[in-house]
Amino acid sequence: MFLFKKLFSSMVMPLSLTLLLFLFGLLLLWFTRRQKTGKVLVTAGMLLLLAQVYGWGFEPALKSLEREIPPVVTVPADAGYRWVVVLGGGTYSDKEIPLHSRLGKDSLARLVEGVRLYRQIPGAKLLLSGGKVFGFGSDAESMHNLALQLGVNPADMVLDVESQDTETQAVIVRQMVGSDPVLLVTSASHMSRATGLFRKAGVQVLPAPAHYLAQSNSTFSPTDIFPSTDGFTEAQRVAYEWMGIVWAKLRGRL
Image (cartoon, rainbow, N blue to C red):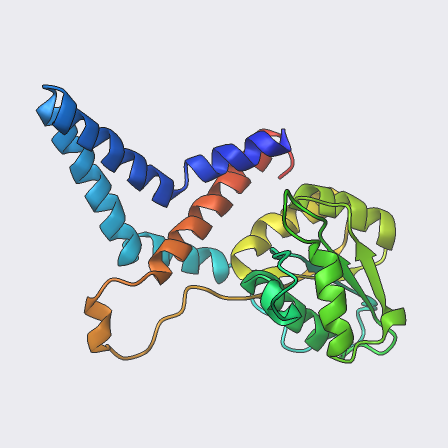
């Protein structure tokens, strides 16, 4: 099921759909008489491509996801939080590059936020969650190694190296923290789904979003008229989270 979920989600990502539209459209135009259908597919592919590189629809949708839950600037002193849970967001297994570069951007941003919050709580535990997925490294182990270099006490860190997705993370973290309330750190776009899954698993969470992708400047820049590769990332993230939310709701997890 996990493999099917990963393959299906990758196949229906906006960029994958764009390439499929172009491919089938060109095949029809070059090798069949269905010229009208081919033109429609190529045109649809071009429109979807433009929507991604210019952020049409995708950027506002991502911003809505990311701004749904406010960040935690200061940990409430009287709430009894002793756990800071950081969900991994991807790690490369290439040993030839520095550790901080092997962590994916999501994992790095989440870890930094997790360490910042951990330092606000005397006696806190930093729970790093995320196992190996396919040929990639373990998020938990990579975050642990970098946290050591950032000065985090090794005795204050607890690792979950088994989980492969958010739903599994919620179950394992529940077993590790029991009924204790936790600060939950993940990417802002992922926070709504993660919070729902963790609460469904019985974990008391205070959401602490990190890594905001949808950012806009207050003034216009001449470069705004040109396409940007950032739009691809934003489109992929929106589609991934929407599919994750729909999948969880269909299975009664949200």
